[in-house]
Structure formats: C-alpha cells, structure tokens
Amino acid sequence: MDKGMEGATVRNIAEEAGLSLGALRHYFSTQDDLLVYAMTLVTERATDRIEAVVKRNLPPKEMVLAVLYEIVPLNEEKRAEMQVWFAFVAHVSHRKNELPIPDDGIWKGVQKLIYYLNQISLLKPELDLELETERLYSLIDGIAIHALLEPERLDAERVRKTIHYHIDLICIQA
Amino acid sequence: MDKGMEGATVRNIAEEAGLSLGALRHYFSTQDDLLVYAMTLVTERATDRIEAVVKRNLPPKEMVLAVLYEIVPLNEEKRAEMQVWFAFVAHVSHRKNELPIPDDGIWKGVQKLIYYLNQISLLKPELDLELETERLYSLIDGIAIHALLEPERLDAERVRKTIHYHIDLICIQA
DNA sequence: GTTTAATTAATACAAGTGTATTGTTAAAAA
DNA sequence: TTTTTAACAATACACTTGTATTAATTAAAC
Image (cartoon, protein in one colour):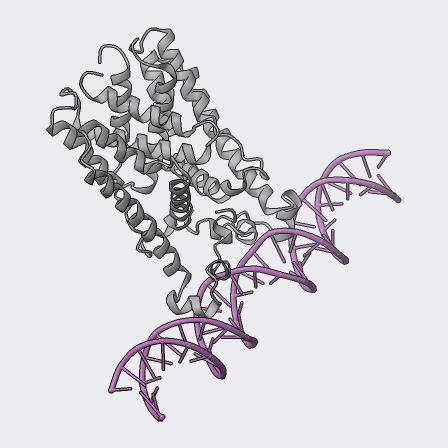
C-alpha cells in the first residue's frame, strides 16, 4: 500500500507474511502467480460483498444504489482493494495475453442493474438500455478512480451524492 | 508501450533514444526526472490539442463534443498518450507527496464546458452544475480507461456514441 | 514407529537496477 | 587562440531482483 508496485517484491511479500523466501515459494512458484492470486482474491471479495447486498432484498432503487456504493471506495477496506486492483491492472495490462487476469465483472453487474430497473419499469422509458449501461459503467469506474487519486476533492459524501444524482436522473419521478 | 513500466529502465530509455547512459544522464540526472518530464510532456500535448480545438470556433455543442473527443483515446496517438499517463500515474501514485506530478487539467476543463453550456442556456435548467461536472468528468475518464483496457468491446464508434448520448441528454431538445 | 510427504529455511546465482565517476570530444566564449 | 563549458561515452559500484537448489524440519500415513 505504501511502497507501490516496486515494493511488491517476492522478498517484501514474504517478510510481510512472516514467511521465508523458500516457504512463500512453496505456495507460489513465481511472482506472477502471486499477482494473479491477489487479483483474484480482490475480485472474489468484492463479488461476495455485492452478492450479500443483493440478498438483503432492499427496495429496487435502494438496492441498486447499495450495489453501486459497494463498487466504489467509500471506506478504507474498499479503498485498499481498489488501490491493489488499480496498481495490478496497470502493472500487467501490457501482457494481457500471457497472464490470466481475472475480469472484475463490473460490466456485467452494471448491465444487470440497468436491465432490472427497466424490467420493473423504474427506468425512464425513453432511454437506451445499452448506452445507459455504458454510461453507468463509465461513471462508476471513473468516480472510483477519481476518489482513489483525489480523495481530498472527492470525499465519500460527494461520491454518494453523484451516484445518487445519476440514478435519480435515469429513473422516473426524479 | 510493450514492455510496461518494468521496461522503462534508464538503460532501455537511453537505447530507445539512441543515447548512451551517460548522455541521457546529462539531461536527466535521475529516473524520476525522466518520468516527471514524460508526464508533463503528455499533458502539454493534450492541452495543446484541446486548445486548438477550442480555437476552431465550432458551434457550441459541436465544440463541446470535439473537446471531449480529444480527451479520450480515439486514435493510436491519443491511445499511446493515455497508456503512458495511466501507467505513470499508477506507478507514482503512492508517493504523490515527494514527486511533482502534473495535473492533467481535465477536471477544470470539464468544469468550463459545463458552465459554458449553462451560460448559453444550452444546459437543461433543472440540472445541478457541480454534480453535472462531476458526472461528465467521471464519465469521460471512465470511458477513457475502458477504451484503453478493453478496446475490442469499446471501440471508437461506441465511445463517440456514448459521449454524444450523454451530452444530448443534458442539453435542451434532445 | 518408521517412512513418506509436506513445509520451511538458508544460500546461491545470474541478471538487471539506479546512479556515480572519470574521461573524451565538440562547441562556445574569452 | 586559448579556455571554459556543454555534450557524450565507458566503465564501475553497490545493491536488488526473481528464481533455483539444497538441506532441515515438521506433520501425516501406513
């Protein structure tokens, strides 16, 4: 978190985990394995959190908002996850083809939300489903990155307000 | 571009530039200087391109769209710039306080666009200026990153369509 | 209780890293 | 024309990197 990707050396990770170099290597024979594992871990944690929110059976609009709030770094835990994800994606994006980078699943999740809002007739009928998906997807990830990189300007309340504002605008009776 | 941030070693950069290690060091005494220079260069190029667009005196809406299109990676040149920017920001974001990372100026640019649209009464009057700025800012950066990381799904035309769609929706008489 | 496997530790190694140093050539100033 | 400065080159240094190897220890299985 404070040494960046340069600090994510096999030795540093071993030390942080309280293991020797050999012990760590017993579980992860290469550094790439380590990175892919960490990325997978982050996506799984996020997915679990989101599924838990869905299971709470909130009213439609509140559920949609709760899911979106779960994607974005509103507390320190999610902030840490997002930071890891951001660093790793940037670090390995130049060799997508040789590494099994897990998909974060946000695109499909946002797609489900939009289609759900439409099915229960909460989405304004004049809107385009596909473009609304693209728009919300970009909005969420954009906000997430901005909140990560400029936390002083974009605090938690402002993040929530912006997302709420957008959802209100695409739903009937704003 | 194809070796990522790990490949941005002083030696690689010197070779790519056709210089010896010593020669490169004559201009940049440390690697950080090199990175900061490259980031500054990218922002300056982007800023210049945008200012050129503004000077073309297009009709309001077309001007706004043209500016936004200039931020987003719609061709290989901008794609390369964006990739550099993305890699560098991720690489140095964990030590914002020790490095003079230049601001990309997109926030202020988007703010100007929204306030301009409002001043000439093209923006729907019921909208919130500050939240619309935040929304467009996130949308643009989100689209930019998605276009960078998933170019097959989000091609140039889809990028333009999404941005156009959003601007239509916040302006009167869609 | 002995053997087999899993786990951990300790070094080793070759390669690459940023940066410093020193020397050489070319250009500009005096 | 001399001298001072800029530009470049070559090498050196100390250190870190990922990974391999080998050995020691612990746990499980039989």
